[in-house]
Every structure is written in C-alpha cells, then in structure tokens.
Length: 355
Image (tube, rainbow, N blue to C red):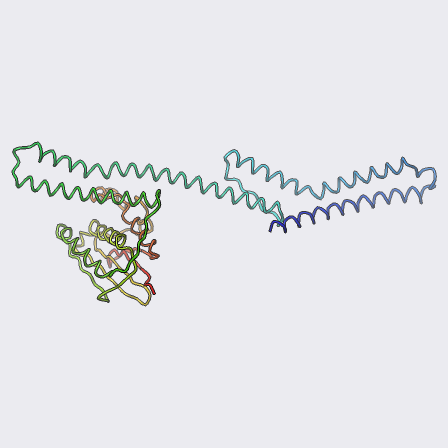
C-alpha cells in the first residue's frame, strides 16, 4: 500500500509539472513567434527579449503549479492543524478524508489515532472509577459482617453472665458471618484477578455436571432450610460428562444459586434444570421471586450493578457474583442469559458438548 501511495504521489507530481511546463512552453513560443514572425525578426529578437520571455514563462509555470497544488496545500494545512489539536489534548475534531492518496491516508490514520486516544482515555477513566468504586464497596461490604463478628465475639469473651447455650448460639452466628465474609473476599479476589491480574486460570477435566449440581444442592440444604425454600433438580439425562474446570464450575453455580436464594426466597421454590441438546447442554437456575424490570436485565451481569440498592443492602453482597459467573461461562466458551417474566426469573447457562 505504501508503494502504491508513493506511485500516486509521484505520478500526480509529474503530471502537474508537465501541465505547468506545457503552459511555460506555450507562452514562450507565443512570445518568440510574435517577435520573430510578426515583428521585424532582427532588431527585436535579442538576448533581452529571450530573458524576458523566459521570465514570463517561469512566472506562468509557478502560478500554474501553485494553482494545481492549492487544494493539497490547504489539505496539508488542515492536517497540520489537526496534529496541533491532538498535541494540545483535543481529540474531538475529525479530518475530512478527501480522495485516495497519501494525504487522505494520513488523514484517515490521524482520525484512527484520535479514536484510539479517546478510547484509551475513556478506558483509563473507567478503570480509575472502577478502582474507586471497588474500594468503596470493599469498605462497605466487609464492614457489616466484620462488625457483627467482633460484636458477638466481644460478648462471648467479656460477658461472664451469658449461658453456654447463648454462647453456642452466638458462635453459630459468628460462624455464619465469617462464611459470609469469606464469600465476599472470594468475590473480590476473583474480580481483581479478572481485571487487574493474570485472569482466572481454567484447568479443565472431565466431570459429571449432573452429579456436581446434585452435590451443590445437598451442600446448600441448610441455607434452603433456613430460608424456607425447596430446591429440586430436573434433568433429561442421568449423567452429563463435560470437559470443565471443576472449581470454577462450582463457583459459577454457587453464585447463581446464592443469587436465586437472595432474590427469589419469596417464591419458596428454586428449580435447577439440565437439558442435553444435540451439541450443547443448558443448565437453568429458576426462581419465583420478585420479577426483574426489563430495563435492568441488560445490566444484570455488569460489575457492582444492583437492581435495587436498598434491597441489596439487606441481602448483602458485592454486586460481583453475576459478573464473575458470566466471566467463568465465557472462559469455557459458553453463553449465559437471563429472562424474567410470569414463568419466573431464569438464568440459563449454555455449554458446548466436546466432540
């Protein structure tokens, strides 16, 4: 492409020189003809006249060449002004791409450079805002369970009057709050790895997806019991061997089940459905709690996004669970989507079945 541009440039330059030279030749010939033929041809045609004719010709050549190049000179000035704007920090003005030559290519590349600078600046601002938001969320989300843990431990250690039964109750509460704190820290750790570190590392191996989900439901049983929720697994196959990262897959469905418990406990029922298709397998986590507004569905997997801040403050969480779930699904080459209507709120994960 670079060689083609040079060819176009030199071709146009030579063409302009030829045109200007033709004008020079025509004017010079005209004056010589008038001197030698129309004039007396002896006294008038001398060195002085020849110099004068050449001078007129050179002036005509220069004026013709400038006339032919005037648009290009103006275009070069526009390009220079755009570069000046960029150097002063103005990335908003765009150059008009005119023609198909080296200057138009330069203008195009300058526009691309401006777009890249703008995206880079916006990305840096977004990254900075995300970091600030992360710090704020860490301070808020970790403080609540930590305050409870310290408060109950203070009572257990310093209050001699409480009964052993009360101590046991308080110890259970401390344990639950500590598990909550662990979950929050794990979310934050995963988020920082995805955004500022080397990313989550996928180590795939053959696992039975149906068995994994059955095991998760058993582990969540106390939480289902405490919230008055019934959870059942429905599958069109007894076993589904998949090439997945076990730890990340557990984390994915833990986040989806936790989300269903937090925001769907009013519905009292959670369904987990496995559906094997020809070359894919779908896992749906369905709850029957409050419906999610349509305008919120597209933002649901954004980090720190919460449909209802007041409700989220009651349920706790960093607002990172669904963002992490989406990242895990995409790391496995799958897809995740959500819908919320009269049939319930459905988070559906789709994995490709390895050949």
